[in-house]
Image 1 (cartoon, rainbow, N blue to C red):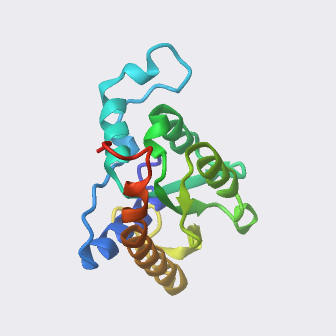
Image 2 (image 1 turned 30 degrees about the vertical axis):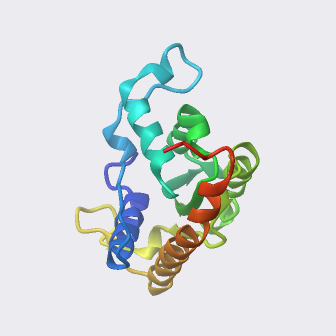
Amino acid sequence: MHPMSRSYVMARQAEVNLKALGVEVAFFDLREYDLDFCGRPAARDNPQVDMLRQAVQEATAVLMAMPIYNFYVNAAAKNLIELTGDAWIYKLVGFMCAAGGQASFMSVTNIANSLMLDFHCIVVPRFVYATGDAFGNDRTEEMYVADRGIVERLLELTDMTANLATAIAPVIESLPERKGRT
């Protein structure tokens, strides 16, 4: 949610990569939404939640870019999943994480496991984890992904996501739970 978000920079690069592959992309920035925390009265009644739920439900794949705080994905990302619930069923999900240090590399595992077990998501087996030194002009309007390794991993993530989404879409649509669902 930082105004100079590193995860946002990675998300925008992923968007560029996907569009270069001819993939239709819808981009959502949670900084632009006024979402209450799940569990509070009427949190799910917010029209913005309905819009986000529909967007997730209509997507074949979702790439999430998020910071890592205290060895876990940030609360806003987890809250999005909790608020939109079963819209995540059978989604292909990939992750891009921005963190303060290398020690939190496995932090995305808990949310990936939850998505797989609760919503039968398929997790892209490549995720991107970047620390602050991977960015040029860090925390400025001109910030960009400078580390060639991170740039290559973002390309691998977007290529793999696009290819897997194409491959699994007919299988997912043929499942009895999905028939008649848009």
